[in-house]
Image 1 (cartoon, rainbow over the protein chains, first blue to last red):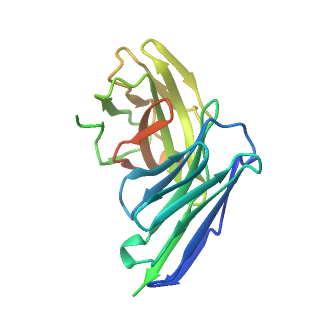
Image 2: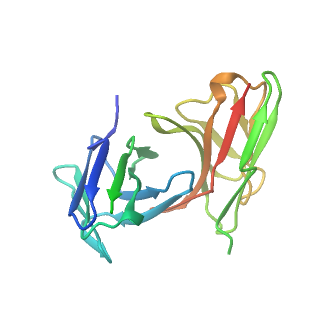
Amino acid sequence: KNEVEQSPQNLTAQEGEFITINCSYSVGISALHWLQQHPGGGIVSLFMLSSGKKKHGRLIATINIQEKHSSLHITASHPRDSAVYICAVAGNQFYFGTGTSLTVIP
Amino acid sequence: NAGVTQTPKFQVLKTGQSMTLQCAQDMNHEYMSWYRQDPGMGLRLIHYSVGAGITDQGEVPNGYNVSRSTTEDFPLRLLSAAPSQTSVYFCASSLGEKLFFGSGTQLSVL
């Protein structure tokens, strides 16, 4: 049973495209994180959301608590955005999605 | 403020060997945890701790031990390494909803 489901699993985009990654969860949470992991690299938290919407540069994250759903959007995608994006929810422990592998082609 | 420091970055073991993965944080976080990351499976919780002297098992604890003698340190011990423990390991610490990861340890068990 997966408490956190992400889609798509893999995504290839042309540079400049608008990208959306979705996350649905089934547990009660106090917050949701969007994490980024570059190949061979560590994991960093891009956003922490408990409601509404946050924006950092070209990245926008939204959450709908009632529908238990969050989206991560990347505007004007760039090859340096190529990474695995992981949705993590903070319930009684942290639960993680399996990640979305994004490749942005120049 | 170094964040979460995890060592080593790479390790190769033979079946049956033991080793300790080190994890330290300087942010005074109460909650620390160890995860393994395997292809297609996402991060799975091995053990966690909600404070010094308190540890508990996660989803995949077999073959691993932990201790938490101080707030700062949370080492993960492999008692008798098996090839099934070949994975990438991450230590994390959190306070409230803030979440920080170590840089990871790539472990191969031959």
